[in-house]
Image (cartoon, rainbow, N blue to C red; front, top):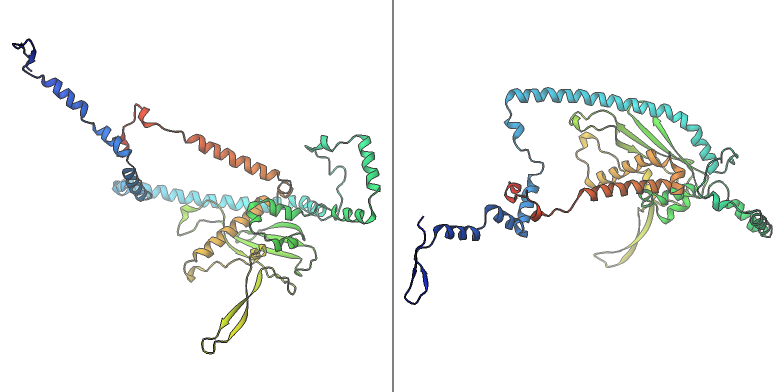
Length: 391
């Protein structure tokens, strides 16, 4: 490349006769964006980002073609690995069957404790001093001085006899034990209507009975004291489970799952059925124009619809309706929750301690999720290459 030759003009001004090609090239390179810079600019465009997101969304779940491109010997080995996986799945099914047998075995050990809980709640027995030997967080607040205790006794003596009888009645057992639990747990409180509460007040106990024969399953038993609403002393809800892999999709097996449920008939007393309501509709005759009032009975929102679930269609009856499928999925979840959490830990759901533990667990999960999503500044990342990331 030739060096520029400078000349001095007659008026003394220095002139540049030849321009340096290197300088021109350098200037052009400064003004011309690189492919990485172009990609970075494109990635800042909302239209480009939206188009890219749609494209990536359409690719989710689509096979990449890698497996299909593998050589036959490798595919053959994969078949062997899948058969091994299937054998492992069958062993896993046997494992869960034994777990169910253990549940049945230990249910007999829990039974005396749960029966005593029922007796205390229903005021059939009064706990002994040794039964009540359990530390309380409120003990310091509950400890009164002798002076305050004596004052309280004097005040109690001044109460009227009617007030005493009312107090004694309210203090029997644990008032509103199961109703309080139902209202404390969101999953259950959503099902309970105002007209259900007086009936739920009559629940004395809820028990779980495990099915020891095939098919695997369990039954929820709701025990009621005599009441003005129905004549049943026990309402039942049976759940049937599948404990082995589905032949059509064996690798989806993750343990026993509820596949069916069956309720019971509630013998409602006259005018007390809260699961139905009567509505009146006006109808007008097309020919005569005369109007008449028609009375119609329709389903009413109620917790007690829980004992009349939709039926699972048989395999030869076709696909299940989406609404029915959603109702059954919610029903299965509720039944499992009552069995796994409510019945074994009832007192903790009554006091709210179990709810606090659940909330703490949820908060920890949320904190982990939030902590894992750190803000990322691509402009200050020396290793960021938009072109590579797009590909």
